[in-house]
Image 1 (cartoon, helix red, strand yellow):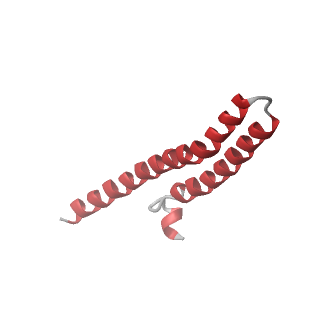
Image 2 (cartoon, helix red, strand yellow; image 1 turned 60 degrees about the vertical axis):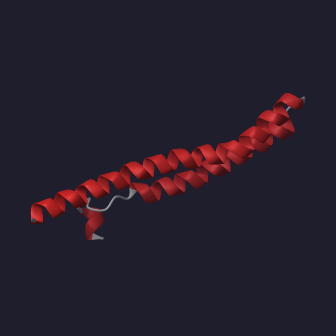
Image 3 (cartoon, rainbow, N blue to C red; image 1 turned 120 degrees about the vertical axis):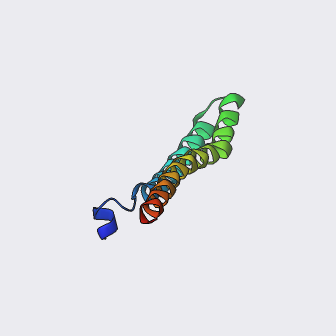
Length: 85
């Protein structure tokens, strides 16, 4: 708990994972509503594309954000090791 209060450990990577699952939920709901509410083949294809590629793109975006935070953790660890030497 002390690591969180002193900002030594980031809470954002965990929060990003929660946000990812909310995003997937809304992407799936939006894609299904586009498929079933659409009139014509255009809406069906857009809905299917969103259903297939939306979660993948959300995952890639969230992974990029997590990588940035991991880089920050590694730089902090390197600085800590340098200060010890």
